Image (cartoon, rainbow, N blue to C red; front, side):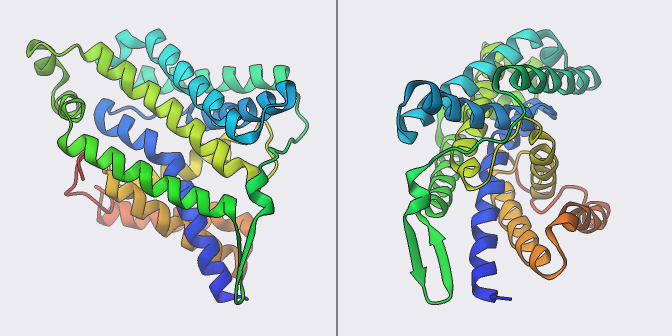
Length: 289
């Protein structure tokens, strides 16, 4: 086993997990909502990038904004459809609705794009960097760089921006925030739009490394859920470091045992951690941390 290569693979995979989870981290922290349609939103972002390139002939870079915009619109429509449930904090109904929404998105994508695997042809995959025993591509570097930028920006906005203060107020007490004159419906709408845009961005950067299929949302939502919960509810920094830890674990465990058992092994680790530390790695953190 090439230890250095697996270490690099783990760092890249960890940043991919973290970028995919960043929108869900904000959603769970502010709205206390688990979106089980998150994986299907990731899948749709990947297929939108592929479709734009395939149907219009636009380059990969031009397809990214189209996918991000589609994700933002999908998140906004999703939130608008269940705004009353969100304001009422009807969590059981919300989980069922998001689960059903995800299945509808997957079925619709199957009809629109077909069930055959497709590839997003990113030119960044052709640019390779060899450093001793380690090989990586420009696509890998892009995943790491964009993830770090996204987390730094979100942390800064949540800690110092006016919008961040409104989001933190909604997370603490939505009804009291509404009495203070803040339109919580617009805050929830913005959070869902951000989640959709962020996960679509993650898809356009991560998906070119492997074939994409319409059923891939389930695997994505499982690993994203592990990262978000392990990092702590709403903790931006916790989600980043949890994603990095899961990436390193997945790389080395997959190389030593086999990638088929990575998800099961991840839950064998996360269950005792959550029993001993229910708040996750950042139980003392919050949306601004």
